[in-house]
Length: 122
Image 1: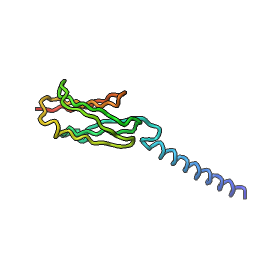
Image 2 (image 1 turned 120 degrees about the vertical axis):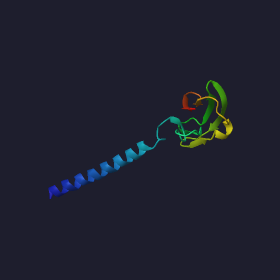
Image 3 (image 1 turned 30 degrees about the horizontal axis):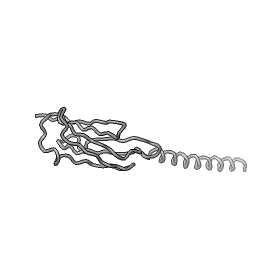
């Protein structure tokens, strides 16, 4: 009889431990839980499109971006993105013909500045 109780107790502890670990893992896998980060990337880095994405997982919600053709500022703007949201910024129609071989996009949230660029070959 005591060995049956020990087995039941061990099974009970296993179930409780497993449930707790699943809960902790799913909570920590959430990109918005106790985290403060944002990222900028191209929608398709291999083609000539300049469309880019700002993905926000921070408490900041206003992002300012500038597009540079070499050292010259070509375009820019601001966008509001809530926490947990992703926004695609379409630029191809706005910029027209690219003159330089390197296009740089700088995005800032007021405190942090991130930069992505594309090099175009002849």
